[in-house]
Amino acid sequence: MKQAKTNAVRMLDRARVPYELFTYDYTDGQIDGISVAKKIGQREELVYKTLVTKGATAQLYVFVIPVAAELDLKKAANVVGEKSVHMLPVADIEKMTGYVRGGCSPIGMKKMYATYVDESALLHEQIIVSAGKIGMQMKLFVQDLLKLTNGKTAHIIKA
Image: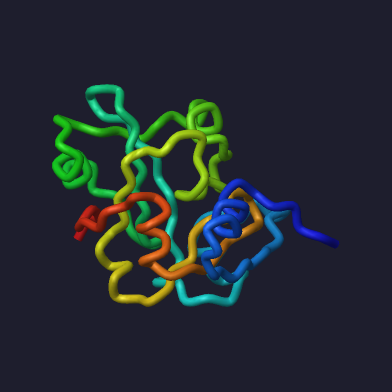
């Protein structure tokens, strides 16, 4: 069966960026990043999750962090120059990004939001992020991810 392309995959194709797609069964409801890493047979430290936050100024920010890590909201706010940031309510994720919770890719959102990838990604040549829907992940070069999202790296996870 042919896999429908997501916005993220179409963007990679348009930019001629190499990537590898992984699909997994999500009917068991196990869509957390650690479960996904196991399902696609990849090392947990290579799989990153995409978190969308809202700053005190109402600006949205995207953070890409290892699935086993937790975003440090104080560090995140500091990096983006906000007094504070908080997680975007689940009800607003699709409206603001075009993606659903659990299938949010840092690439191909409705708008280009300021994107920060945890600096741990620089330890790897490639990382795996959501391909834009639940059940699909993509592996790409960290530098390509940064280029496509106009992303920056920063230390944004809890120690």
